[in-house]
Length: 114
Length: 110
Image 1 (cartoon, chains in turn green, yellow):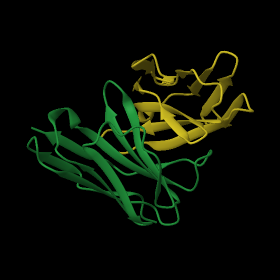
Image 2: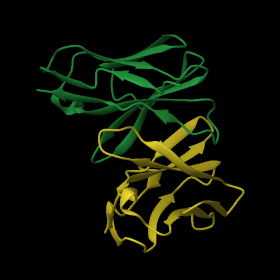
Image 3: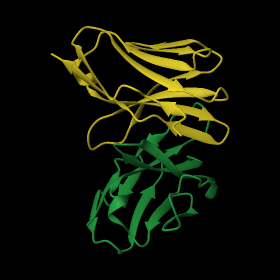
């Protein structure tokens, strides 16, 4: 079975540009999560979806960040306009439920904003 | 405020010895706790979990202990192997909440 697939693996762009990160969850998983990893804060949950509906977006840093899940097999995280402090590794994960079911992570997108 | 804390950013252990990774939390309403392991350039992978109604769970070389009164959990790896060198994250799950710690980098020396 394919795991969680993220694209691109690396993104380098200039400040002010729009950035779109993509995620394909594991088929059959009802929950999808977006995380940002930084040295200072570790893995921060940005937003998560249940059955394509956003449940908790309290971790989204500001209005420049938005996430969508138009169907069960695809989600995007968009940053517009991007800033150098957005540079980080962004992970997508999916799971069967929110309880003790583990999350399955993609390999991440390393984002560098110049 | 960080509800889940891993106060040791790094730990070095000799091969064959025990590795003990610690995690503290502030919210007594968490229902489950999980440990993940992360290698460079890869996403975290699930290692072991424990329900808040238990105080110990074991899986091979990995054991997680939960002390609810102290709001503390720990992961024991015995014996430690060089392949265990990675960053370890603890995570706590409550109602609609899934919170990770900042991670501890474990280095197992051959």
